[in-house]
Length: 139
Image 1: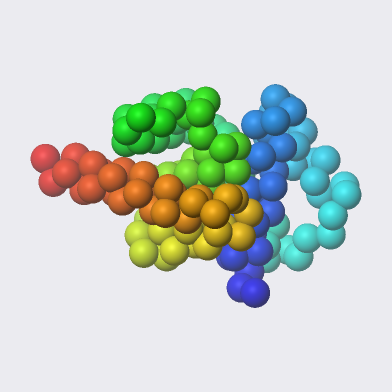
Image 2 (image 1 turned 120 degrees about the horizontal axis):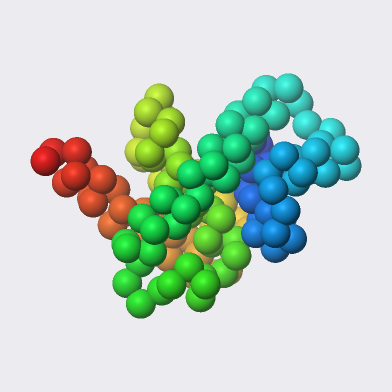
């Protein structure tokens, strides 16, 4: 498994923890690091994803909500919601990562950790979000 794939899995676990326990990112990261051994390579990228997603969560949530027809964030499965948050952060702030990579990684995480329909659900919302971002950048 690649270091970025592992980092995304770690970030998803910590973001899920933040969502469920309502703790701040630093506390959740510290709790995770104190209980699990993480390679230095994976910890750097996962930290970036966790901190970035947490710091921009309000704007990310608004963007996801605006691109998800008939699905409010509160109705989404926690796993799907946090995968979408992390992928949206990547799309907005990690310009070195191609869209297709972010999309594929998010879909794979959904298939591995979400429900039977998570992959297609995540794909649909991220596609709508990407089209919207492309349109806004063109204007």
